[in-house]
Length: 285
Ligand code: PAF
Image 1 (tube, protein in one colour):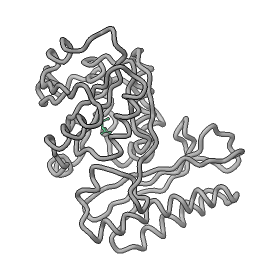
Image 2 (tube, helix red, strand yellow):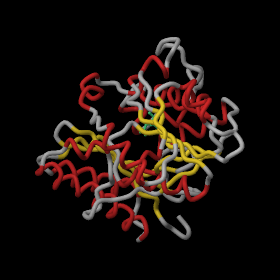
Image 3 (cartoon, helix red, strand yellow):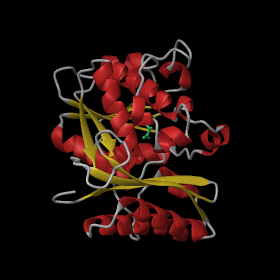
């Protein structure tokens, strides 16, 4: 695996006649990221990954500062799982004209960013769209590989790709979970033992909502029940539990005809903010 710190070097090094899958990350890699690398390697000639903790998508400075950084371990994991190129830039290489210049800045994502993460983290998705559009400009992959855990992020990036007319496919890989169902996340490393044990409840409550929907229960009481159950735990502070249409991200109203029904949540566990979602498998939602 070659590690390159400069966009110009990476562009020179990439053979253009091979199919390229790109896995953007912020590092602190785990088995969830490795599932993305595997999906990329299984379907393409070359895998490019990036590790860049993007300052423009953090709305709390303390969150940016404490974001885990483990570049040596990350590089070893990527190499062991078949990644061919790692782009490991600094801020100046990603944003040579400054962080304010943003190819994606005039995009109005409308309802896609009005709820959930968009409502709770103002400006977050503008930063995500900014960095992903810039990384796509650098790597020019055939396929962008993203994780289902960030469901809203995937929807925003798809919209950004469409609005900017970029020629890239999106491959979404299902969430990988710990033994107790907690979604794998770089942020899990920041949880202490008690918080880590409490965090398992997030998936259990999402599973309860999915089971309720499958049994035909109405949406709002299910959201409320999960919210209250999470809120009753001393170490958990839920921000939202939302059942929504996976295409529009608008709240699901009982009886709506949707292609994909999703339940998502964000929960503060100590100082750590965790998100998770589940797609509801209904023959006739
Ligand atoms: O999901 C992430 O890790 C980040 O939001 C991404 C897509 C790498 C952009 O910084």
